[in-house]
Length: 184
Image (cartoon, rainbow, N blue to C red):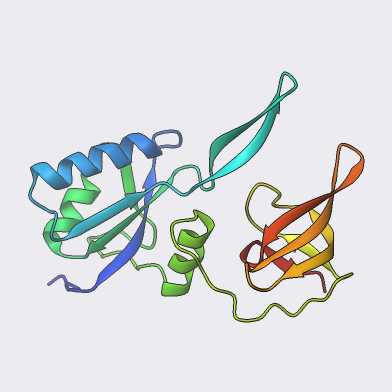
């Protein structure tokens, strides 16, 4: 007998790569037509905005963080599981071991990190242990992967100003506390 959970939790779906948004659309449509709005709540494709330079112009585009995956917030009942599993483009759940086993939900901290990264929730940083002159890594946002030196700290707005090397020059840039970590 399959166990059912009556807690709303987040699960990761495997999809065909490049079909994540189509799966989202298909699933949202099926939720309505199959009367599952009380069991399946949100479908997200993990994306973030990044700056891309093309033909000398800088544009902001959405980039898929995890190609081939989508997130679904749902109550894991047999019916909801069936609807999601049989949505066109869905190849399975991450954490399901086949043979009718239900998938493992994401941990709350994983969900919080993912939603904050997508700017869907604001995460408040209690204290950032850095001082002017420290080096930090940018871990999310438009400058992810860059390293910079802190030139100013704004505790009220939870931002630091760091110097990031752009086009061969150090450029002052404001970055949220959430988007950096100290270099050890």
